[in-house]
Length: 160
Image (cartoon, rainbow, N blue to C red; front, top):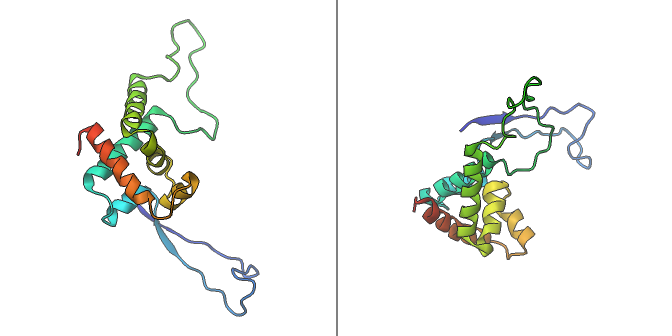
């Protein structure tokens, strides 16, 4: 995984804390841009390796299937202008179709009560606290429910 140091430069006239007099202190933070919320939990011993592997496989299927919302224009190559039959089957490769089926089968296997937290944290990259709040769950219940969902995913993928 790649760690990257994020730094912010402040113009001398800008104030971080406008109410504070005197010199302003900057914080430098090192961020691992490749780390997902479940990798963060696993690195702190809150998930088993099987749960982490199952979650990463679900995320890989989600990405491979192209289920994430697009926020920019697609810059794929245009089909050839001359002749018929030169155009490909509009981006629907067999690998993408297979990943799409695997993703939906995995979500169905997890079940309706656990699929929400699984999708939010694993696929959308939302933090546990944000997912709990969005689902209307009590604080600190998300880790337990996510663990149950990842256990079911591990059984689906054959890793647990």
